[in-house]
Image (cartoon, rainbow, N blue to C red; front, side, top):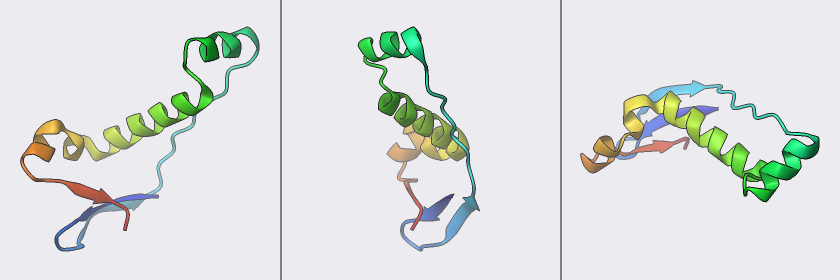
Length: 76
């Protein structure tokens, strides 16, 4: 579940919404190679969650939005 909340007022701006961020495990040599390159399962899952949340937030997650003071809290 994810939602965007105005930190000042507590008003829910978007959500709550169920999002899916599936990441499939590699097997065999591909898993060994990926780990050796530093792309562990934890890193891949973290990157996937960040990607999905960024996409869901859209403009709210851009650098410009943060610099202009439009910072949102996720969840409550």
